[in-house]
Every structure is written in structure tokens, then in C-alpha cells.
Length: 361
Image (tube, rainbow, N blue to C red; front, side, top):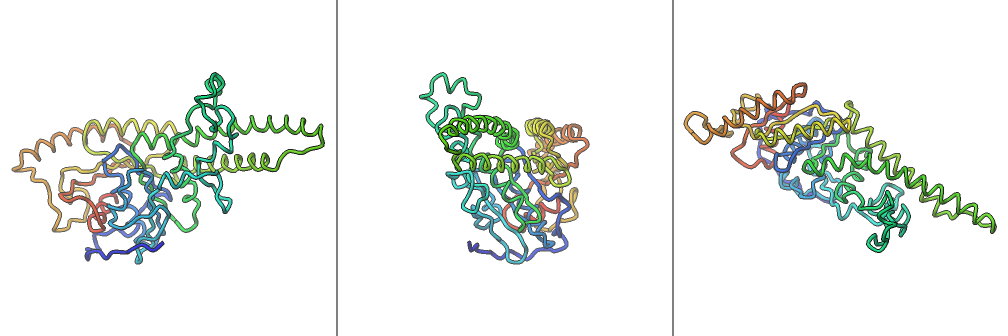
């Protein structure tokens, strides 16, 4: 797919990071509207500048990565810069959730086909109409809705991209906190579900073999293929879980703004991530009302600093932020806390993203 590459304004190269000191997989998470997309785009740009083939992935159904990078980001990974190896993709849940669990090449396909693989119209197994199944559906431990398709599609694509040899680093802009937690729960949920399904189908397969054996018939190839597909899917889910829990490979970065509610929600996210065993190395505090020179050596003459001397509004907001920052420092002790100043302009395009990257270090 051809992507139009737009030229950017001339930059002060001394202020632009050459590469980043980060794990192979960097995930940005937090509540909606705190700037996760901005951080992911900035990290991706900086990572690619030293020749590291970097993919920036958006798993948020409400995509803004295209706007932030000021270029068309497709639903399949594509190179969006000619001068540096920067790739990007916005996951389209509707396209990612296909009809079958495996694609034409034998790779992991759409998650929507799992219900068919698990048993078609069997009660509570993802097929048929649960409303017409009465007590059987209510008693079935596997009944109920499948995991959210947005999260399932995101997990499927992460499995695919994390094993893609084209990319040396993958930077993920996750959906808001609730969606992210459901995404992280999926490996555990689906591993448990697939384990029970495999056991059930193996038992049923044995019964069918015994019955058909009496009549000189053998188990159908489709049943065997279905079991093999489930085993492969289970192995890939386990691989994703192992990668997310490996601090040498994964750095989950929590993004927040200096407000009390954001601090509290970020703390809950940290607690949940700890429960999942997902390492958090960095907490990013975005939109801090302080001078850019306080957080980075990059200090372009066009950057506008809030007037904390004569602007009463700025002074009061800064007091609120200082309280939240003190609370954040106490709660997130042991994590590296990075600050990104409040920009007068909306952060879009390489000129501003490179300054954000400098703040992230």
C-alpha cells in the first residue's frame, strides 16, 4: 500500500533524540485523553531515527494516530517515512475479526471464528442462539459472550506483529484503561477457556471414535484439525503472556495528567498490571505547566511557557498540579517518572513530537 509521505519543517537536530533506550515492546496505557497516542508516536519517531525498524500500533478503536503523525495510517502495517524505518498501523476491529481462526497462509486469523471452532451450535460454546437454549445455556460454564471483539482483535494483531521479523521494536498505543485491562485479561481468560474446550472435545472425540469404530469408520479429519488449531492458538496466547511479563522485552508505560483523579486511576492501573505480572518501568506525567527547560535540554525559541508570574489562572492551575505531582511522586516511588510540559499548540506532526521525545528521554 502506497503511503503519501509529507515533508516536515527543518528541525534543530541537536534537540532530536537519536533512538531510544527502551525494551523491544513499549506499551502506553492510561485513561482516555491523557496523551497516550502522543507518547507512542513520539517514541516511535525517536526509535526509528537511529535505524531501528519500529512499528507504532494503535489498538484504540477511536483512532487518532493518523492525526498525530499527520499522515494516513492504514489497517495493515506500512512504512510511513522514506528517510527512517518508521511503520504504523491502526487496528480495525471489524476487519481483524474474521470468519475463521486461521488465515489462508495458516497463520492466526480472525478471533470471531473461535466460536465455530469450539463447537458450532453447541450450547454455550459460542455458536447458536443462547436465547433459545434455555437452562442448558445458563448451566454451561462456557456460556455467555465471548471477550470483547475490540480487545480480541487487538490481541490477535499483537500476536502477529510481535513475531514479525520486519520490526525490531513495537510501540503500542493502547485503548483507555478499561479496554486495556480487558486486553491484558484475555490471555488468562482464553487460556482457561481453551483448556476446558480442549478437554471436552478430546473426550467427545474419544466417544465418537469408540462409536464409529464399531461400524468400521474413523474420526473425521476436520475434528483432528480443529483440535490442532486450538492447540496452536493456545501456544500463541501463552507466548503473548510470556512476552508481556518479561521486563527484558516489555515496558508498559503509564500516562497520566497532573490531576488527583488521574493519579488515582493510574495507581489502580499499576495495581492491576502488578496482578497480571506486567512490568511498569515508566510513569509519564503529561501537560505539566512548567518551563520546558526544567525537563529537557531541548528548548526551542518557539515554545510558549505558561505565565506563572502574572496569570492568576495559570498560578491556580499550577497549585493544583503541584499537589497532584507530589502525590504521584509518593505513589509511584520506584518507577521512573517523566514530565512532559503543557504545549500551547495541539501536539501534531514531527516538529512537536520530537520535543515530546526529548522529554521522555
